[in-house]
Image 1 (cartoon, rainbow, N blue to C red):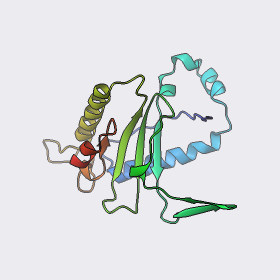
Image 2: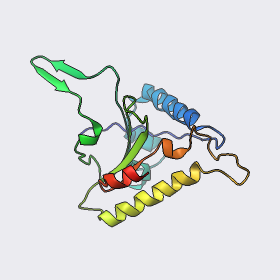
Image 3: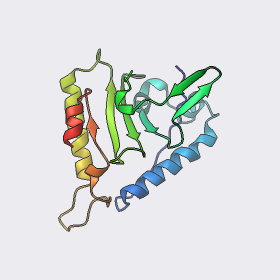
Amino acid sequence: MFVSTLPYRVELDSHWSFDVLVKYVQEKCLSILEHSHYPLQHILGDNRSSQSNVSFLEIIFDFISVSKDMGYLSLNDATLEQMPLEQSAEVSKFDFSLTFQYNPLSDNKRLSCGFVCSHDLFEKLTISKIGQRFEYMFGQLFRTQSSNIPAMNSKGGWSNYFGIVHSGALEDFLKI
């Protein structure tokens, strides 16, 4: 598999609403594509780094968005149909990845996220703990502060946006 890595850094404002944050990250992700021709080895060389000592190369964030207009795709004599995300079998491209999924066609319009991990390297208990800590982190991000001002203003609270799935535990996802 070929992966083109484009490192970038963003500064976040704690007063932004979740919608503003998502829009900002989207704009940053799209703006960096104009530099996709620049090889990672040159980027690392410019910063006097090597692939062995750069931790961001070990992390991947995957965002999947379902298009409203794409129910099927025809290629010559073959027809490909869209499969619901809940039924897709996850195969880990990397040892550990975090996947965000958004389906504007779903009834709840939630952004869900889950971990895709190598079972050879991670035990289910470890992934469960990581999932709990990740959920706690988002709880802290979107909690109401003592001054009754949300830490990050989101419409209806953070639980309307996030469901956490770890180790393929759909039951935990449905509880949130």
